[in-house]
Image (cartoon, one colour):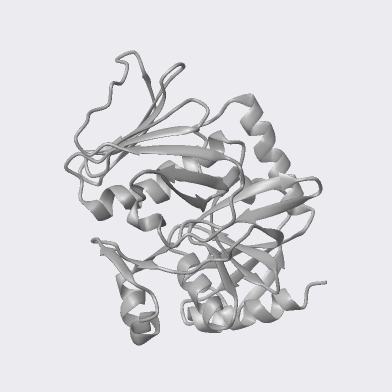
Length: 308
């Protein structure tokens, strides 16, 4: 058995998924045992209820999430196999079936493991995160805002990567800790082509129709969250990055990973985390189409390092 710590979880597996092998974070004591069953089938109750469904553009099923009080949760999709989590998030059975290796492993790190982290009591946001001087900066925004490209640009300026696209937060006393994610970034093909040789330090793990998956090195421990930035990239946006205050918790709530786990305890925890984040520095940065990730990263680094 080997252990890889991602999203605040110590993932134990007898056959470690390739997308977790570069994880170097310290163990947290939150255990998730993973059984990779390439030949098996899931014994799933017919009485389970559907709690979430996503469709492809042609109306076919993309992702389904089902729940059963005793069996737990099953996350599945024709391209991704079937993944069954125990109700407490401590056991996971992965049955890839005929799914391609890069597809089911991408689903594992992007959907299944963050779901397990939420079951363990962590709050999960759609955000990338970097660190300057041991302090974490979360980067969130709408899909396509450029979170991944910006995080990589910040790394080229000397920042350390914490997570790409999915960020697990833990409330500890009066601060939030940002946990390292999985050591994989998904970069859009156009951005990968733009960067060219700058990506040579990252090992290619896979390619799909949307992105190139690249292995990266992350920080080795959770870091205190100092600020949250909402990326607001618009066709009519300013030609220079413009930082503005962002009041309230509404935008943070909109960035939560999912509302599928909508029990009262989880919703109270989510509000608690958002209020704690707003007690720090939360800003919106607006940019237009001519501001590339490197230019934006330079502005953000200067702004962040000026914070007390």
